[in-house]
Length: 45
Image (cartoon, rainbow, N blue to C red; front, side, top):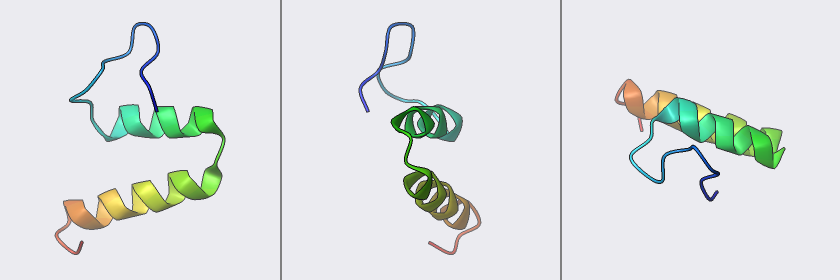
């Protein structure tokens, strides 16, 4: 998911990742990544 003009090239957070995933249009990928990130954030992943 290459950065578009005006987007950071690296070091971005979950919000930026979700934004880039949404533009791909794959709802399942968004769900998997956000669920995994949430589990990691609370120490389960």
